[in-house]
Length: 380
Ligand SMILES: Cc1cc2nc3c(=O)[nH]c(=O)nc-3n(C[C@H](O)[C@H](O)[C@H](O)COP(=O)(O)OP(=O)(O)OC[C@H]3O[C@@H](n4cnc5c(N)ncnc54)[C@H](O)[C@@H]3O)c2cc1C
Image 1 (cartoon, rainbow, N blue to C red):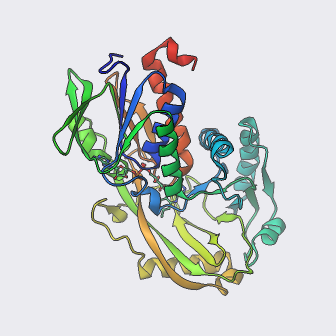
Image 2: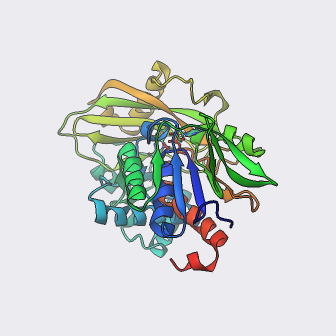
């Protein structure tokens, strides 16, 4: 890797949870070997990140999905040692409705144990009922429960990552839009900012979320990222209703959206519908989309909540909600990779799981940089 300054210069475009996590991990692990600059066109954490509900958990159903989230939980636990509590650990409960789901849950517990997560277990419908008052367990076969899981404040976490990166000498700039990538002979040479200034770089990381397509195009790369609109509804709930685990009546890869709910404040319940596929009717322009919740979605959500937790639905009153974007590429899987040996690195397409996968994204970019920097970086 050639040096444009005294040390290789890494430019990160985008100050959402992914860009700031990359700045944090690269600065923490390679800060003495590279210089790091992050450009954010607005302010830190105000894209998809602030519109998320911040759930972080490891209750997944493939070894790879478990591993990537376990990396995230380990990194967040290390961050908490230095910076104080980050995760509100109310627990997470994935609901199963078939024998196959129960078997997968048993496997997940084993995969989690292999990754050092010892708190996950399979629970039966009676325990589900005891943990989530008001739930109707008819048709449920088992729950996959992690009591160390929970949720973060996603904007606060992105600001914390940025602070940590700064403390390891990264430069973080807000209100500095990047216009395009500069290249020569298929390799990155830097970026041009919207004000016309040129910033040399050896590596450019595209972490621009639902806006990432434009930067890819400027590099000549045909990877489109689309933002799919997702909504959250909020309800007032009695303070006496307990701080239940987040219940998720959705199985990854099932092709069906599922309802989830939890308390996120003493008297507020948040409820949404999650999926991991791209519904074309929700594809949205990240600069112009409806950030409010629709009446139709609230009705659908309340109907689903009533089916899953009728005894809870009777106690709540609708108060509002919001909408945000899940950024997806066509593959529907997050992509963290260098394009050939060009110095152009993608960190895009995190859909509805970017908060919990952000530490993993940072670690992946560290790996890419280590292989470019060579043996000296491998040891650090
Ligand atoms: C309703 C909802 C609930 C969700 N719940 C969860 C959850 O519980 N757990 C979870 O893990 N995930 C959740 N998500 C998903 C999560 O919010 C996203 O996956 C994540 O925020 C994506 O982060 P990002 O950094 O890629 O994008 P963003 O947060 O959008 O960041 C991209 C940044 O790049 C900046 N940018 C763009 N173009 C440029 C440019 N040219 N120059 C400079 N800066 C630029 C933007 O201003 C923006 O700040 C949820 C999402 C929604 C909408």
